[in-house]
Image (cartoon, each protein chain N blue to C red):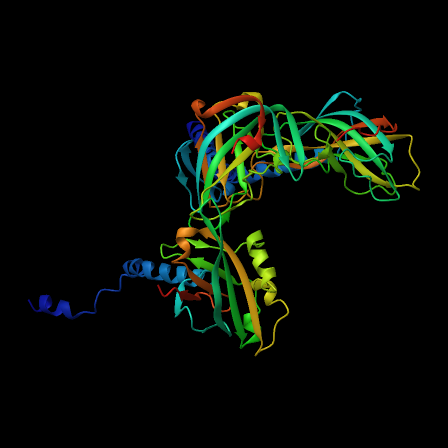
Length: 200
Length: 191
Length: 186
């Protein structure tokens, strides 16, 4: 009688496991993910100027940075009372569509006081504001932030590069896109005055 | 024998609910679709010009709380590529200030084959020359009603169109406003 | 033992079928996305709101044009592809905001904003019914995207349940040039 009860118990357990295996797997996976995210974060790799950095949609090669009151590449002198902090870089669009999502690519750590929140990007080939970058065609661009004249000029800046990952189907519209921005590399640059752009 | 004749008078077989529900299914589905789509259909009807209210060219007609009258429809210029610049002047006497002032109003030139031309956003240079020459304010429909003109006032509207020279002779003028859609006014060319 | 194996096999097959169904479902943005209409360069193709005919495509290394009193000279790291098209709104006034070069490898190059000031640039221009307008759609493409490409043209930049014309560009409609002066193309 005990063996019969035991056999019945084992059968019902087997069928419960069969039905509930999906839920159990999901529980196990989310637990493992929670443990992984709770671990201390890995340190940011340090990059050098001239070294290609893979930042999701873009491949970046940082060239140089400068701080000056020289006019921008399109001739605009900037608002009175500001100077321009500029970073020159080579960008290649690694995605399959034209894109101009470069505003959040570079940030400063520690943040520089008085800096304008979003940079203006210039295409140095044309000396004009950047439109879109086409896939696979590398271009040299300059990103310019405004800094008030009176703000202290740092000697060197630490630039953090943010990259996104590609999801072929997102959660809302099942459309491909680049999501989850997170820092991929950091680079320390010395500031030097930018030469004024000659010609048009 | 007597049992056999007594059997048929027993109560009818119980109703076949499965069959009844199956027959009711198309009716219920159609009803549900209708209830769901009612709002979407009324929104679509309110955005499109569906029902024409024809009127002769030289008379006034009422629409959406105003009395509309065509002052003039002139051919200003002919371009070498076969297009014509047309200038349309309309006068609206406001009867109900609230309903007339809702944007956006839609004035088009409509050909009998269904093609229609929307007014240009900025008047072409030929048209602005004529507007300046005639000392016309040159306000298009939206800006003309911006200040919410009171009832009883008259509003002058000037719109310019670019259309093929061959289509100008038979083009009717249509006016529609959000307060009146799906009804719209169609001033029919007499010829 | 057999029953256990059978149970496990049934689970595995069910998981496989569900996985296949999930992976092959078209996404929401595909179902509500552009409705493609195919055509070939040279013939006039009518979409829902416009008619388009691609006459030819000129590939060039540099572009030159005059606009607003100054002259522009643009070079590129890839190639310039200038498509000479004729477009008309049918049946109402419209404008084309979507123009993309679809390369054979699947890369999409949107019409270049660097050449927007050119006089014949057609993207964004009003198209009236009955007045076909000849204009240029200018793209900056990679060198290996020049052959066996297609043009994707639509009224909206990201069409939703609206026509997108996909016009194949055969090699006999493609010309080459070293420097192209856009003012001579009309």
